[in-house]
Structures are given as C-alpha cells and as structure tokens.
Image (cartoon, rainbow, N blue to C red; front, side):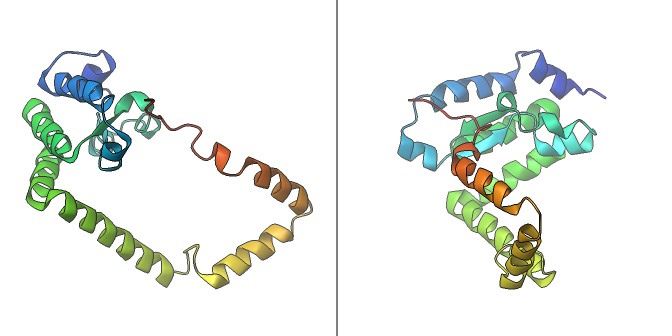
Length: 170
C-alpha cells in the first residue's frame, strides 16, 4: 500500500511540508559542530506513518528519509506536516514538543530511557546486569571458534559501528 505522503516523498513533489524540509536541508549544511549537537534527526516520512499504513520499515531509516533539524524547526516540521497531510500523530508531536521546549524534550527522552532500562532490568534483559554479562561471556567462550571470532570482532571495533550513518561534511 502506497500513501499520498509516501508518493510525495518518493516523487519529490512540491508542497509546503517538503519545501520546508528542503529549506532545512540547506540550512543544516551551514550548522557548526556545536549547533549540530543541539539538533535532532527527523524522519521526513515519520515512523507513525509507516506503522499506521503498514509500509515497509526498511525504508524508515534510509538517508533520504532523514534530515537534521533544530528543535524549533522540528516543531515547525510537524506542524506543517499536520496541515498538509492531516495526520493526528503530527499534531500530537507538534503540541507535545512546543509545550516542553528543548530541555523538557530532553528530560522526557531521558525519563523514557530510564523507565525502559528499569523494565528490562526487572526482566533480566539488560546488558549492564553482571549476571547477564557472565552468561553471555560463558556462551561466547563455549563456542569452538570463540578466539577467532573475538579476534576478528576486536579488529573491526568501532570503525564499522557507524558505517551506514549519514555524516554531514564541513
């Protein structure tokens, strides 16, 4: 199933929302490194749209669907998107973000992370649980090829961690 919003995105159609996104993409190229640390990544076709319309989630995080926005531009993007596509989740995002401000949004994200962490910890499914770490280490070392795998993984390390992420060049 292909929606009008997704068709507009794929066909690079001109409307108030997509024109605003293009303007923000140009603006993002001018951000300093410090300004980028205060920015947020916005999905042009948002997660809620993919989920509501059963679109293939593999297209959610493709670089073409991501844009770096300042906090205020992020609010404005959801407001304009709601006006163009009339999706209630955008109205919620716009309302919630504009009521909180950047500090409130950060606090909410941190609280959500802490709550998720507490739930996972209570289920024994968190990486920072020493017993879980011991179990995973024992499982790993029980493999016949454990030394080979660890040696290869150690050489790859962080260099490949961000291989598929978009990096803004200065």
